[in-house]
Image 1 (tube, one colour):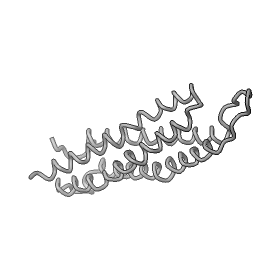
Image 2 (cartoon, one colour):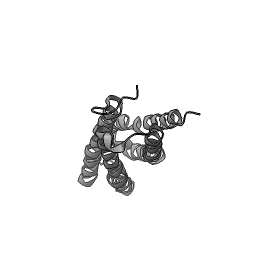
Image 3 (cartoon, helix red, strand yellow):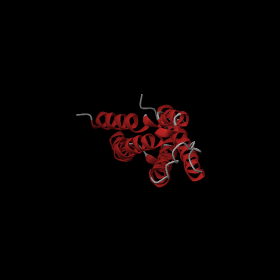
Image 4 (cartoon, helix red, strand yellow):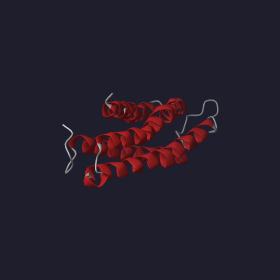
Length: 165
């Protein structure tokens, strides 16, 4: 059995499952901007996807990536692209677990406990605190997406590194 290929399969599969939704979340956000009455539902969907797919599969890539390095017999210090990619990956994981997850949880709590507009009253839209958290989520979500695109570039192009082709 070729363990390198097993680890590679696990690593790429985890990347697709973990990072594919990052490109869907902004689409959901634009739909909610047009139909704010669905904000709570959209937050719950995004939170469930992040907690059940994005974060666990992203975290699992530490194991599969380590397996790849080990089975490829790479000289860790001879691959600067890999060192940079791992640092960016750890930054993105920290953003996901320490910024985006708590921000979404706070948003859900605020939206679920927001007072309903009275009968016949026009909705004034989400309160400023909700909008600030949404903006925070957009900024850090965008940063995470850029980090993962840079990581993908580094893993494929391997600038200054070895070639496994």
